[in-house]
Image (tube, rainbow, N blue to C red):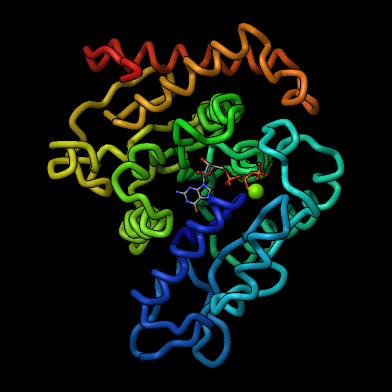
Amino acid sequence: MHETVTISIGECGNNIGSQFWRDCCTQSDLSVSGHSLHPQVSPPSHLFEEQVSSRFVPRAILLDSDPGTLANIRNSDLGFLFPPSAYISGTYGAGNSFGNGCNDPDLLELIQEPLNDQIRIQAEKCDQTPNFNLFHSLGGGTGSGTTAFTLSHLKEEYKTSIFNCSVLPEPDASVVSPYNCILGLNYLIESSSAVLCFDNGYLMAKMKVIGEINQYISSQLVDMFKSEKQWIPKYDEDAAYDQRHFYHSEAMWKGEIVTSCPVSDTDKVIQEIEFENTKLYNSGAIQSIKQQLDRFDLMFKRKAFVYGHSKCMDEFEYVEASERAHELLEIYENGEDCTLTTD
Ligand SMILES: Nc1nc2c(ncn2[C@@H]2O[C@H](COP(=O)(O)OP(=O)(O)OP(=O)(O)O)[C@@H](O)[C@H]2O)c(=O)[nH]1
Ligand SMILES: [Mg+2]
C-alpha cells in the first residue's frame, strides 16, 4: 500500500485541508478528534494512521508562514485531530510574494527544519515511500512560493508521486497574484505528478460564499482519495527528472463537461494532449491560466511591482516562468484546436 501524506500550505490550502479532513472523518464515522464512532468501520489507512484505543490520526502536515490560520484550526473543534507537531508556521505571512514564500531566509529558518523533519517522520511511519498531496492557492505568497519550496524538497528527497490541488486566483485577487501564479506554475510543471486546478473566479461567481467553495473542492478531493486506488499517475523511475503531469480541472463545473467528465474518471476525459513530459487534459481552468499570464506579461513588461515582489529572487525566474507558461498554452491550443480568449 502507498500511504499518502497531505500537506496543506498557506491560508487557502489550510482552509481546504480543514474541510477535507472534516469530510474524511464524517465519511469514516470518526469524531472530529479522530475516535472511531463505529469500530467496525475503519477509515482509509493510506490517509490515517491508527493509534491506540481506536483513535486515528491524519497523515497530515499543516504549514503556513503566518501563524493565524493554523491558530484558528488549533482552536477549533478540529484542533485535537492533529498532533502538535503537525502544525508548522512562521511568525508573519509571505505578504503576497512568491519570493518571500519560497526564499525568505527568516521564514526558512523557522519552517525548513521542522517541515523536513515532519515529512521524514511521516514517511518513516509508512510501509513504502508515501505519495504526497499538496493543497494550496497559486495567488498567495505562501501558497505559491512555499509550495514551490516544498515541491523542490520532495522531488529531491523522495522518488514518488506528488499531487497538487491548486486554486487559481480570482480576477480581483491581489494585484501581484498573476506573478505568484505563473511563478508557482513553473514549479508545478517541473515537479508535480498531477495538478488539479480549481478556478476561484469561476467558483466565486457560482457560489459566492467561500465556505461553500471549499466544501465543493473538498468533496472532489474526498471522492478522489477515499480509495487507496488513486487516479494520479504512478511514479515512473525512468522519468525521475521529467515526471509526468497533467492538468485536469475544475472543468466539470463548466457546461456539458460537468456531466460527461467526472473528475475522478480519467477514462472519460475528452481530450488528452501529450507534450514532452506534460500531459494536458481538457480543462476550463486553462482559460484562467491564460488570463493570469496575460496580466503577468503586461505587468512585467513595465516592471510593475517587480522591485518589491522580487526581493528574495532573481528576475530571470520571471522570464523563464512566462516562457514555460506560454509554451504550455500554445501546446494546449494546438492540441485542442481551440482559441483561448480572455473573455
Ligand atoms: N477557494 C478558496 N480560496 C481562498 C481561500 N482563502 C484564500 N483563498 C484565495 O487564495 C488567494 C490568496 O492566497 P492565500 O492562500 O490567502 O495566501 P497565502 O498562501 O496564505 O500567502 P500569504 O498570505 O501571501 O503569505 C486568493 O485567490 C484568495 O481568494 C479559501 O478558503 N478558499
Ligand atoms: Mg497567508
